[in-house]
Image (cartoon, rainbow, N blue to C red; front, side):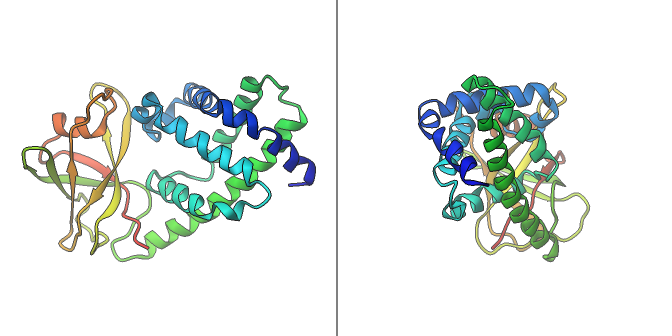
Length: 253
């Protein structure tokens, strides 16, 4: 990025502080309307509750504030790239996100799409996308290099469900009967389920218990104030032993 681009991006910091959530809410609505296939990737419960727009607004603001030295955001980059890998985000999807984000900035801030400001944000986005894509490429490679490892989504069968009164413990085993990554400490895993009576899948992150016997176990608690896209509630109400779910691999460092 050249100095002019940097100054233009930094000039939007006050606006992002004041209206960042409005911008990101508009962005998600625009992108998911234009690209409905992405509804299978983004958690719609988090969209409807506002959690995801707020999280993205904070990330965009932090990036704009540190545009001259993005290395300051190393911890945030690590968190975001880990989350993206758990959702099987692919490099080609960054172009979709970027196009919708730039148009959202133009439309919400009421500046021409051909303006210098949008050009500056395009360079800023491309810089960030490149950092994330490279970080995620390394994580995918690390996952596939492990014994029992995999990248993306993998089919699992529910082999047991135990009820402890306040939650249920789901036990799952790989549908292909091949090895899975063993874990000695609790690890985050993403589980994707089908939404009842809809052609739609939704992901949710759970904590998997230590695994050494070819199975994963994770606790599922009912959610209050949920929408029809609540993965925990769908698991509790609609899934039984023998049913299939999709899992992404635990990312052990």
